[in-house]
Length: 156
Image 1 (cartoon, rainbow, N blue to C red):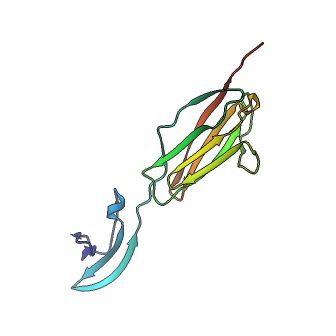
Image 2: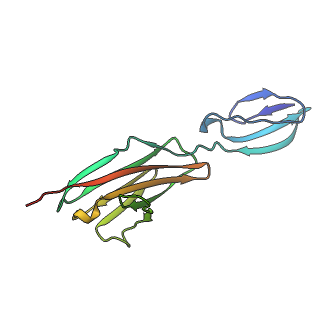
Image 3: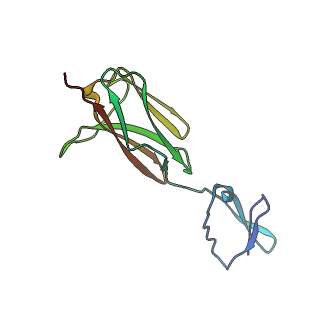
């Protein structure tokens, strides 16, 4: 029995079994099992990779009244495509993360393009000091990163 991929990859496998151990998206595609010069079976094989979050800062400091500060969350090497979700968790024990959106907070804007999601804070105030969590999901798994958004407190 021979395993054949139309792009040119071919290998001889044991009787009655096809085992795929893909290591990259380039190996995904349609495979055919050929026995005695006859196509016995066709199968489509996908490469799944859970999200990995790249190069994210662990904290951002702002002054009360600052404008247009950004946090960016970048997922790399994941397949298939990912979805992003931002949430906010107040500092302190037993605080629960709450999903945030521009509808829930008019001082933020969230832009997601491909493997990149950015939260833009407008008109920052001391009350926006919290931990912001970016969660990235696809069918292969998920990844999260938590960034502390802290204020420089000025006492007069």
